[in-house]
Structures are given as structure tokens and as C-alpha cells.
Length: 490
Image 1 (tube, one colour):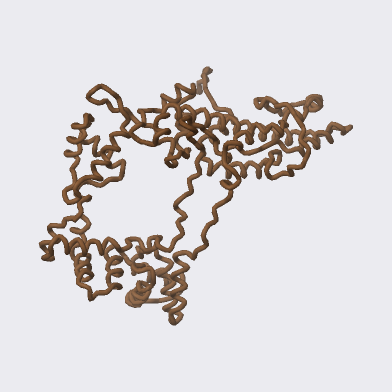
Image 2 (image 1 turned 135 degrees about the vertical axis):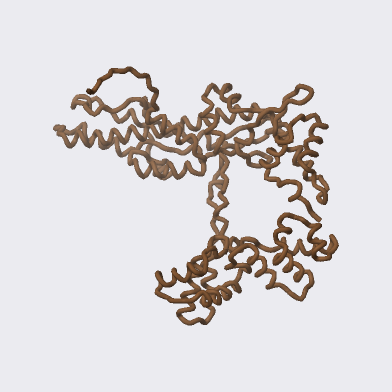
């Protein structure tokens, strides 16, 4: 038997406007431009002032409350009371962009950086293959091998699998020996090391293309062939005994191996993986006074489309208001609402970014004056959230993806947040300061006898930083510094 219950629940839900603002807040400047272009394409009621005719006359209109929602059951009388003037703002004041342009990027900064045109890694190999006179069958085998290489230039696919690939995809029946012969041909192409099946083969291909009459090269080949594991683990004492070499000779051989490229496929690639960092804020030092400005690209000049006013004027003059005309007006009003909400979200985003960054700048004022990481104060998200009277999640969204450009470089806002460590004197310092001292100790160590984590812990304790060895190991790993054994040099 079914039982029916009546319950009351108190739920908290985000409005569409709040969701839109959250999404806009967390994206960086480099993605904001793309997001605005998408909105301009989807909403014809939204215009970018920079793309419109600047000679058009500008009219002043009061702002409308963005919280007004459209009711699907509006009557004809409600449409008569609707005025498009509520949706248009004063373009001459330009509340949404130009006031930041005065202190933001100039026209030179807005120019796009040209991208170098360069043939890809696979195109380069195919060009070299075209220069080799091969029968059709061998050419198709070589093309299949080149197409099977990964981005690092390695052939990870087994030869037996290539036999099947050729048979099913190209109707070419080849033996493993035939594929091995063509693979040797491709391994002779540039860059050296291409077509290798593992790191050892990649290094050997590069070494054998050098002067094998040189004893240093011959010993390097022996190390890669027979003692690669000892080499990667830096067991130099074992190598000296096995090859009957002294430290100076081994150092020359190791330096020769270190010159080789473990990823030859990357050498011809345009560095598309390295994304350009566009700062969201600029901080300048004006005679000891820090000045914060917002990147002009964070302040786009948007407005509601002027042509939509003409639609409503035409509607007002219409003597009959049939169902189709009401639907058209309803569609236009929805687009106007969306445009106004988007403009307000952009404006609120600018205000939130400036408010948050201003609080961070004032909290870390000394660091932005000197650029010394030791001047960073311990700071957590809650410290800034309390200052600006906002939620911690809001500060987190701002800090995780935004950059600030200073006289000392461009920094991710998240890097200014750090935990506190208490000294023996009772004073609290940022763990950034401990990491900096740790980095200096490792840089100044004797590379023949690197400092172990236990020794680094003792050094920090002598300086007054009473932290555990596991904490030192955690900080070292966070800075991508290997263990002492792997830092050893000859």
C-alpha cells in the first residue's frame, strides 16, 4: 500500500544570474575574451561597443533592475507598459570598461603576438621520406610507421601490431623483418633518435651518429648499452669500477650523454603547450606607493543593442497585437534580460577582482615593494575573505586562475597564500620563507656530497625553524627538487 507524506524543506538554490557570475569570476582574462565572443554570438541583443560605429549618436538611458524577471503570462496591457529604455545604459559614461582603460593596457599591449608558421613533426618526416626513392609497398610501410609515432618521436606500437595494421588498413602484407628494415631507414632521419622504441635505443641512435672514433663517445655507448640503470640512479662509483675510469673521465662521458635529447619528437614542434600568461592586474610602484590597475581586457565595453529599441517602437505603433507579435516581443525581452544580466555580471566581476586583489596587495604590501619572498606574510583564504566580507569560495575562485604583473615578475595569486610556521622565538613566518632558505641551502651544497633531508632539517633548526624531516621532504618535493642521491654530480 502506497503511503503519501507531506514534508517541508528549506533549500538554498543559486539563481541563473548567480551561476553566470560564478562562472565568469573563475575564468582568467585569457578565457574571458572567448566567453564574451560566445555570448555575442548567442545573444543578438548584446553588442561590443568597440565593434560598432563609434560615430553613432549616443543617447542616455537609466539602468533597469537586473533582477526583474519576465512573466510568461503577461497580458497585452503589460506589454504596453514595457519600455526598452530600461535596458539601455549611458554609453558615454562607459561604466563597464573605459574607466579601467585609462590605467590599463594601451593599444600596443592589445596587439596580438604573431604565431610562427612551422611544419609539424610528422610533416617534416614525410618530407624526408619523399626524398627517398622507395617502391610503393615500402613507402606505404614507412608512412604507417611515421603515423604510428607518438609526440615524443617514439614507436610504442609493437612490430607485430604494425603487421596487422598494414594488412587491415592498407591491404599491405609485410613481414616483421621488412618493417624492421624500413624502421632503420626512418631512424636515420632527422632529428636523431626518431623512431626509437625505448629510451635506451633513442640514446644509442644519437650516439652512433656522432664520431664513434672518439673514445668518449665509445665509452658513452658502453654505459648506455650495459649500465643505463646505474647511470640513471647516479651510482657513479660503480661505473668508475666497471669501466676502470677516474672521476674526471666519467664526468666527460656523462656530460656527453646529458647533451642527448630524450624526446626528439619535441624538437621540431611549435611550443603550443606553453600558454601565454595574460596578467589580470598590474601593480606599479609610484615612489613607494603601490598603484593597482585592472587589465583593460577585463573591462570590455558592452551595451544592449540599439536596434532592439526600434523593434519595440514598431510594436508600440502597431494597432493590433496578435499572438505572433506577443511571442516576438517575449523573445526580444528574454534576450534583453540576458544581455543586461551578462553586462551586470561583467561589472560585478570587475568589482570583485579589484576588491580582492586590493586586499591581497595591502596584506602583502612589503613584498610588492621589495619583491623578496622572505617578506611574504602567512596568509590564508580566510584572512582575505574576512577583510572584504566575502565567502572563502569567492576568494578561492579569484586566486586560483588570476595573475598579477609586478616590477619583479608575473605571479599567480594563489602563490601569495601560505601557511604559518612558528619559530622558537614564538614569531610566525610564512612557509615560503622556509622554502626559500631550503632552496638556498640546496643551491650552495657540495654537489659531490649533496645534503640529505636529515641534514637539511638540522640546518633549519640551527636557523630557528623547528620543523620535522617529513616536512622538509614535502617542501623539497613541492619545489621539484630530487633526493640527495639524484642531485649528486661529479
